[in-house]
Image (tube, rainbow over all chains, first blue to last red):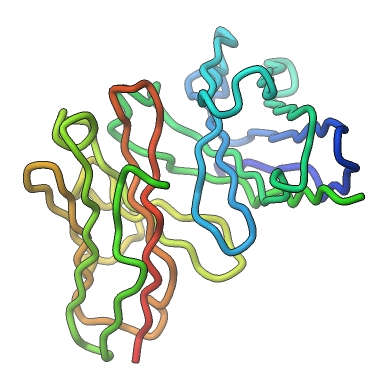
Amino acid sequence: QVHLAQSGAEVKRPGASVKVSCKASGYTFTAYYIQWVRQAPGQGLEWMGVINSSGGTTSYSQKFQGRVTMTRDTSTTTVYMEVSSLTSEDTAVYYCARSQYYPTTDYYGLDVWGQGTTVTVSS
Amino acid sequence: QSVLTQPPSVSGAPGQRVTISCTGSSSNIGAGYDVHWYQQLPGKAPRLLLYGYSNRPSGVPERFSGSKSGTSASLAITGLQAEDEADYYCHSYDSSMTVLFGGGTKLTVL
Protein backbone atom coordinates (compact mmCIF):
# COMPACT_ATOMS: atom_id res chain seq x y z
CA GLN A 1 0.00 0.00 0.00
CA VAL A 2 0.99 3.65 -0.27
CA HIS A 3 3.43 4.53 2.46
CA LEU A 4 5.88 7.23 3.47
CA ALA A 5 8.49 6.00 5.95
CA GLN A 6 10.57 8.65 7.71
CA SER A 7 13.93 8.35 9.41
CA GLY A 8 14.31 8.16 13.15
CA ALA A 9 14.47 10.77 15.85
CA GLU A 10 17.44 13.14 16.00
CA VAL A 11 19.07 15.17 18.75
CA LYS A 12 21.21 18.05 17.58
CA ARG A 13 23.24 20.87 19.10
CA PRO A 14 22.39 24.48 18.27
CA GLY A 15 24.11 25.53 15.08
CA ALA A 16 24.18 22.02 13.65
CA SER A 17 22.28 20.65 10.67
CA VAL A 18 19.83 17.78 10.42
CA LYS A 19 18.84 15.71 7.41
CA VAL A 20 15.53 13.83 7.51
CA SER A 21 14.58 11.21 4.94
CA CYS A 22 11.20 10.17 3.62
CA LYS A 23 11.05 6.91 1.66
CA ALA A 24 8.03 6.46 -0.60
CA SER A 25 6.55 3.12 -1.59
CA GLY A 26 3.40 1.71 -3.16
CA TYR A 27 2.93 4.34 -5.88
CA THR A 28 4.68 5.95 -8.84
CA PHE A 29 7.19 8.14 -7.04
CA THR A 30 7.70 10.66 -9.84
CA ALA A 31 3.97 11.33 -10.26
CA TYR A 32 3.64 13.19 -6.97
CA TYR A 33 5.08 16.07 -5.01
CA ILE A 34 6.36 15.77 -1.46
CA GLN A 35 5.71 18.58 0.98
CA TRP A 36 7.25 19.05 4.41
CA VAL A 37 5.30 20.28 7.40
CA ARG A 38 6.53 20.68 10.94
CA GLN A 39 4.82 20.89 14.30
CA ALA A 40 6.50 22.37 17.36
CA PRO A 41 5.49 20.92 20.74
CA GLY A 42 1.91 21.86 21.54
CA GLN A 43 1.64 23.99 18.42
CA GLY A 44 -0.05 23.83 15.03
CA LEU A 45 1.14 22.76 11.60
CA GLU A 46 3.66 24.88 9.71
CA TRP A 47 4.45 24.45 6.01
CA MET A 48 8.12 24.36 5.07
CA GLY A 49 8.26 23.66 1.36
CA VAL A 50 7.64 21.32 -1.54
CA ILE A 51 9.70 19.29 -3.99
CA ASN A 52 8.70 17.92 -7.36
CA SER A 53 9.72 14.27 -7.13
CA SER A 54 10.10 14.09 -10.89
CA GLY A 55 12.20 17.11 -11.82
CA GLY A 56 13.52 17.96 -8.38
CA THR A 57 12.39 21.60 -8.47
CA THR A 58 11.65 23.09 -5.09
CA SER A 59 9.78 25.92 -3.47
CA TYR A 60 10.38 26.92 0.13
CA SER A 61 8.48 28.95 2.65
CA GLN A 62 10.05 32.38 2.90
CA LYS A 63 10.61 31.70 6.60
CA PHE A 64 13.01 28.85 5.79
CA GLN A 65 14.55 30.21 2.59
CA GLY A 66 18.32 29.79 2.76
CA ARG A 67 18.18 27.35 5.64
CA VAL A 68 16.26 24.43 4.14
CA THR A 69 17.25 22.18 1.27
CA MET A 70 15.01 19.51 -0.21
CA THR A 71 16.35 16.87 -2.56
CA ARG A 72 15.20 13.57 -3.98
CA ASP A 73 16.71 10.34 -5.20
CA THR A 74 14.50 8.69 -7.78
CA SER A 75 16.54 5.47 -7.71
CA THR A 76 15.60 4.88 -4.07
CA THR A 77 12.28 6.80 -4.12
CA THR A 78 13.49 8.85 -1.19
CA VAL A 79 13.12 12.55 -0.46
CA TYR A 80 15.45 14.36 1.90
CA MET A 81 15.08 17.58 3.82
CA GLU A 82 18.06 19.26 5.44
CA VAL A 83 17.73 22.13 7.88
CA SER A 84 20.85 24.06 8.83
CA SER A 85 21.78 26.50 11.60
CA LEU A 86 19.43 24.83 14.03
CA THR A 87 18.15 26.65 17.11
CA SER A 88 15.92 25.52 19.93
CA GLU A 89 12.97 26.92 17.97
CA ASP A 90 13.50 24.17 15.40
CA THR A 91 12.60 21.52 17.97
CA ALA A 92 9.57 19.91 16.38
CA VAL A 93 8.09 16.87 14.68
CA TYR A 94 8.79 17.02 10.96
CA TYR A 95 6.36 15.37 8.56
CA CYS A 96 6.59 14.60 4.88
CA ALA A 97 3.32 14.34 2.98
CA ARG A 98 2.30 13.54 -0.58
CA SER A 99 0.34 15.75 -2.96
CA GLN A 100 -0.72 15.11 -6.51
CA TYR A 101 -0.30 18.68 -7.61
CA TYR A 102 1.79 21.74 -6.84
CA PRO A 103 0.24 23.78 -3.99
CA THR A 104 -1.22 26.46 -6.29
CA THR A 105 -3.48 23.94 -8.01
CA ASP A 106 -3.68 21.35 -5.25
CA TYR A 107 -7.23 20.03 -5.40
CA TYR A 108 -6.60 16.76 -3.58
CA GLY A 109 -4.69 17.94 -0.52
CA LEU A 110 -1.99 16.05 1.36
CA ASP A 111 -3.39 12.55 1.12
CA VAL A 112 -0.59 10.45 2.61
CA TRP A 113 1.62 11.43 5.54
CA GLY A 114 4.78 10.00 7.00
CA GLN A 115 4.84 9.00 10.65
CA GLY A 116 6.87 12.05 11.62
CA THR A 117 10.47 12.56 12.74
CA THR A 118 11.18 14.22 16.07
CA VAL A 119 14.07 16.64 15.96
CA THR A 120 15.27 17.97 19.29
CA VAL A 121 17.73 20.86 19.39
CA SER A 122 19.42 21.21 22.73
CA SER A 123 22.79 22.13 24.12
CA GLN B 1 0.24 33.75 13.43
CA SER B 2 -1.93 31.88 10.93
CA VAL B 3 -3.68 33.82 8.19
CA LEU B 4 -6.37 31.14 8.32
CA THR B 5 -8.24 31.66 11.57
CA GLN B 6 -9.89 28.79 13.42
CA PRO B 7 -11.52 28.77 16.86
CA PRO B 8 -9.07 27.29 19.39
CA SER B 9 -11.65 24.87 20.71
CA VAL B 10 -15.16 23.53 20.20
CA SER B 11 -17.12 20.92 22.09
CA GLY B 12 -20.26 18.86 21.83
CA ALA B 13 -22.02 15.92 23.36
CA PRO B 14 -22.16 12.53 21.67
CA GLY B 15 -24.67 12.53 18.84
CA GLN B 16 -24.64 16.30 18.43
CA ARG B 17 -23.47 18.39 15.49
CA VAL B 18 -20.49 20.72 15.66
CA THR B 19 -18.95 23.05 13.12
CA ILE B 20 -15.42 24.39 12.85
CA SER B 21 -14.83 27.55 10.87
CA CYS B 22 -11.75 28.57 8.91
CA THR B 23 -11.69 32.26 8.11
CA GLY B 24 -9.35 33.51 5.42
CA SER B 25 -9.21 36.45 3.06
CA SER B 26 -9.37 37.53 -0.55
CA SER B 27 -5.82 36.30 -1.11
CA ASN B 28 -6.49 32.69 -0.16
CA ILE B 29 -9.97 31.19 0.27
CA GLY B 30 -11.61 34.18 -1.38
CA ALA B 31 -9.23 33.90 -4.34
CA GLY B 32 -10.61 30.46 -5.12
CA TYR B 33 -7.83 28.27 -3.75
CA ASP B 34 -9.04 24.92 -2.48
CA VAL B 35 -9.41 24.20 1.22
CA HIS B 36 -8.61 20.87 2.80
CA TRP B 37 -9.23 19.60 6.30
CA TYR B 38 -7.15 17.27 8.46
CA GLN B 39 -7.80 15.38 11.64
CA GLN B 40 -4.94 14.81 14.06
CA LEU B 41 -5.39 12.35 16.88
CA PRO B 42 -3.10 12.77 19.91
CA GLY B 43 0.43 11.67 19.13
CA LYS B 44 -0.40 10.80 15.52
CA ALA B 45 0.29 12.27 12.10
CA PRO B 46 -2.49 14.33 10.51
CA ARG B 47 -4.99 12.49 8.34
CA LEU B 48 -6.73 13.98 5.32
CA LEU B 49 -10.41 14.38 6.18
CA LEU B 50 -11.78 16.49 3.32
CA TYR B 51 -10.24 17.78 0.10
CA GLY B 52 -11.46 20.43 -2.29
CA TYR B 53 -13.71 21.85 0.46
CA SER B 54 -16.16 18.99 0.70
CA ASN B 55 -14.87 15.75 -0.80
CA ARG B 56 -14.22 12.78 1.44
CA PRO B 57 -11.32 10.41 0.77
CA SER B 58 -12.13 6.73 0.89
CA GLY B 59 -12.73 5.62 4.46
CA VAL B 60 -13.88 8.93 5.88
CA PRO B 61 -17.42 8.67 7.28
CA GLU B 62 -20.26 10.66 5.77
CA ARG B 63 -20.64 12.38 9.16
CA PHE B 64 -17.88 14.72 8.04
CA SER B 65 -18.82 17.42 5.55
CA GLY B 66 -17.44 20.72 4.36
CA SER B 67 -18.57 23.93 2.76
CA LYS B 68 -17.35 27.34 1.61
CA SER B 69 -18.84 30.81 1.80
CA GLY B 70 -16.94 33.82 0.57
CA THR B 71 -13.61 33.95 2.36
CA SER B 72 -14.44 31.20 4.85
CA ALA B 73 -14.74 27.43 4.92
CA SER B 74 -16.41 25.19 7.45
CA LEU B 75 -16.14 21.62 8.64
CA ALA B 76 -19.25 20.01 10.08
CA ILE B 77 -19.36 16.82 12.09
CA THR B 78 -22.74 15.24 12.75
CA GLY B 79 -23.54 12.38 15.09
CA LEU B 80 -20.52 13.23 17.21
CA GLN B 81 -18.61 10.23 18.56
CA ALA B 82 -15.96 9.90 21.26
CA GLU B 83 -13.42 8.89 18.63
CA ASP B 84 -13.84 12.27 16.93
CA GLU B 85 -11.99 13.97 19.78
CA ALA B 86 -8.92 15.37 18.05
CA ASP B 87 -7.33 18.49 16.61
CA TYR B 88 -8.63 19.71 13.25
CA TYR B 89 -6.73 21.89 10.77
CA CYS B 90 -7.74 23.68 7.60
CA HIS B 91 -5.22 24.10 4.78
CA SER B 92 -5.08 26.28 1.72
CA TYR B 93 -2.82 28.35 -0.51
CA ASP B 94 -2.22 32.07 -0.44
CA SER B 95 -1.40 34.26 -3.41
CA SER B 96 1.61 35.54 -1.47
CA MET B 97 3.07 32.22 -2.65
CA THR B 98 2.85 30.22 0.50
CA VAL B 99 0.86 27.34 1.88
CA LEU B 100 -1.24 28.07 4.93
CA PHE B 101 -2.57 26.01 7.77
CA GLY B 102 -5.13 27.24 10.23
CA GLY B 103 -4.07 27.41 13.85
CA GLY B 104 -6.01 24.27 14.65
CA THR B 105 -9.16 23.54 16.63
CA LYS B 106 -9.34 21.13 19.52
CA LEU B 107 -12.60 19.21 19.53
CA THR B 108 -13.75 17.89 22.88
CA VAL B 109 -16.53 15.32 23.05
CA LEU B 110 -18.30 15.89 26.35
